[in-house]
Structure formats: structure tokens, C-alpha cells
Length: 286
Image (cartoon, rainbow, N blue to C red; front, side, top):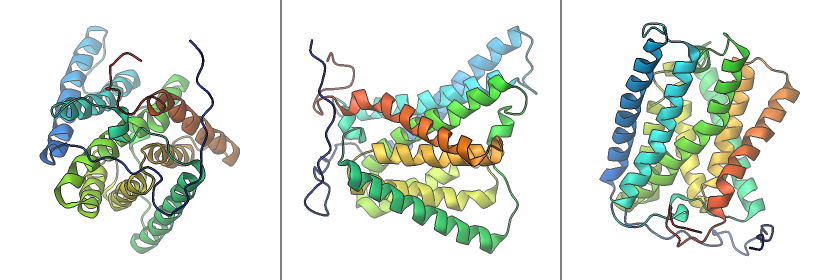
């Protein structure tokens, strides 16, 4: 079997995406059903993880970081599984339907940078208005300050796994399904609001509006580029910067390395799916 040639990116000749996405037959109500099912499956899995942990001496009231990390990891996989399950309810599922498809490189980088600048500018305006000292509580709640292993595990979870799983469910499936209801803008607004809302358990309320804004802008990035890859990359960049600054307290050079590593890891994981034939169902032999 010969190896595939290296990917080539060709700049488009117009301001529209070079290869517009095909519409899916996903029913709009399944966007909410997938989210609920994902959380339900995650809760069931977390109960099993907690039960097993108690057999080894852990307590439910104060579980060790490993239990919390495994529970969060299971939730991320539950998100992906729920999206695929409901997508398959109307026919075969391909990676391209979720946005796992190649897109012209430089236009995608430009769109991602514009999205990032808009997000950070508006977030800075929001922070100046509310003048809060609130911090993200999720990394500490997962035990990053308890051991080096926990720090590494949470770092991978936050900067690689979360961008992949959350983008797959929210921009990959929910946004795609809701577009079949009233179009792009209502779908982007609803997806963004829900995306911010699900972070309420581990984030102070002051941070939720910026997260909703990020969710909204990522939907527009997916629509503009016709691909989920820029969304995953930008999500990884944002999480890496947030983790490096607030949780780890790293220097700038370490944060830059984390950004490069997380984006590279996400793209390596996605590339085999983005590079396959767009009409080949997920799970089919290559």
C-alpha cells in the first residue's frame, strides 16, 4: 500500500469557502437530545467510576484527582458518542458532515486569527465593565495543585481532549442540526449560549458571557471556513493560554510551547479523518 501524498492547500479565488458544505438531514431537535444524552451517559459513567474508586478506598465526598479526571474524560467521550448516535439516526455518518474536512490553509488561519482577536477584544471590554477578580475553578477542582501527574493529566484533558470533544458536539453536530431550523445565525446564537451555559458548574458566572461569545464566534468560524479544524485549533489555543496563565502560572515561552503542542496534537488526531473520502461512513473499512 503506497503512502498518501502530503496535503496541499490551494488558496481559493473568491471570498466564499472553496468547497461549501453539504446540508445534512439532521433534525434540529436532536441537537438538544444529543446534549442531554451526552450528559446522561456521562453521569452514568461517572457513577461507575466513583463506585469502582470506593473499592480502592476513595471517598465520594472528596474523590482523588484521578477519579475526577477520568470522569471528565468519560464525559468528553460521551459527547462524541451522543453526536454520532443521533447523526446515525438519519443515515450513514461521514467525518465531513461534522466538519472534519480539509480547508484552504491561509484563509483558515486568517479567519481564526480574526475570530481570536474579536473574542479577546470583546472579552477585555467585558472584563473592564464588570471589574471582577473571578478565576476559572475547573483546573483546581481537578487537582492540578496536588501532584505533577494530575497537572499533566488535566493539561492534556483541557488543551487537547476538551477542544476535540466539545467542538465535535457543539460546532460539529449541534450547530449543523440547528442550521436546518432557521439558518446560520439563530443556530450560532443558540449553540453559543448553550456552550457557555454548560460551563457554569466549574466557572464563575462572570466568565459565562465571554464563553457564550466564544461559542457563537466558533460557529461563525465553522461556517466561514466550512471546516471544524480551525475551530478545534482555536479552542486549543484559548484553553492552552488560559491553562498556562491561570492554572499552571507558566512563563510565556512555556505557554507558547503548550499552544503549539496542543494544536499539533489535535490536528494529528483529526487528520486521518479529515483526509479520508468524504463519502465513506465512519466505521467503514478504509
